Image (cartoon, rainbow, N blue to C red; front, side, top):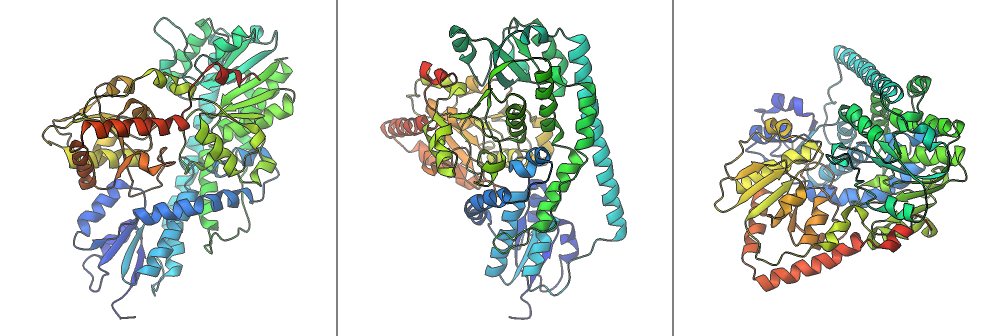
Length: 600
């Protein structure tokens, strides 16, 4: 190997000390998820060649997903089974756990190192850096943490632990006093006779101005069940603490039979879960993953889980159902939104324990990306995880996908898309596409910044293009603005209008992982997916890559739009019809038979 050939593994903070050195490798790659950091590196290393990692990362993630699902399933379950089921590692949700992302990054580094003998790898995560350093020809040892840095880390972790646990206690003690002392409870009516419970989620849009309730996930299911002379009770979770008091009052005034789960949480239950969550899950030894030692990555994920106390909310479902049993509540069946999350696992586990006669129905309410690993279980996981008695899917594709992944075929039933049932009443657009473009961002801040930034670079001040940016309901543009580092052009607008209203004047949709892409295809709007250069691709249309266009750079986006402008109306209409037919397999039509699946 030539003397000047070297493989350097460093953190982003160390890059400044290397710039200007002789024989610095001419190629570099950034392995991380920080968009602002990447932009700074591109400025500093402008003369060097940046390696495009996107395709490699996508391929590695796709090839590793099932191996990772099986790997997690084979881990030794702690004695406290519920503590494991409530953990984010057990859930495998890439939106919450970074373990799978970091494992893929480690494999990516190994591949890059094998291909390039002259490169700087700038790696965000400490454990990924450690794994990569062992694979390089780098003679110097990675920088060791100084004692002062370790002390700062301990103090920071201690502060985080106190902060998060204090917030949990304050949040649920506040909820306890609200539901027990300030809101009219319907508990006595609920305990009188057996009912079908529908577990759902509330937000300010769940109630109209006159107080009427409309469920976003289950539509007319309640009315259907009542026509069959079934008593129905909504068990409605309120995720956002800011909306809690206001929505609790609306529940109390509503004509619906409705409670929040907190109605059955005792004061001492909160403290019991608090102390229980202080237990840590640890693994002494762990097998390698494709020849890579990943214990550090797994330990980091478990430690972060413990510090943040993320499992507390899920663990509360055990005392909730125990107290419901004590109070004489009779649950004929429990219907809930199926996503494979930890709270669902505890819900099923607790119901099987305290209400063994209750039939449990999970409803998979929307399309999911193959990278949303929480929806899939390994054979080993199915031995320890309580599954619902029936899982009703949103359509044909997810039914087949679940069966192929190993779920018991007798538990999976093809249903329809209640959440998007209105789409079947909509006609496909028939006109030539205009230059009106809708951008719907992800809840993921990193991807939202990347999408808006690239759109501005491609279409900012571009003659004829009108761009409307609709941020995710839980993400405000003011939060993203600083990291975008670009002023909003005159032909761009930030909108708070409902997406359904914005669709009426839009012909193109730019997105990363939003479910708006599903609606767009039904309506004849052309979705264009941004392939992120940073993280995992969570596109919900990855079941058929040809169903949408994709772009990586701003230049790619401009070219895709220009190509569409050259097409004839007949071609465009044929594409619209073909795509709608495909999406109907993903989101099935809702009929009375669909609702009857919840009762049979």
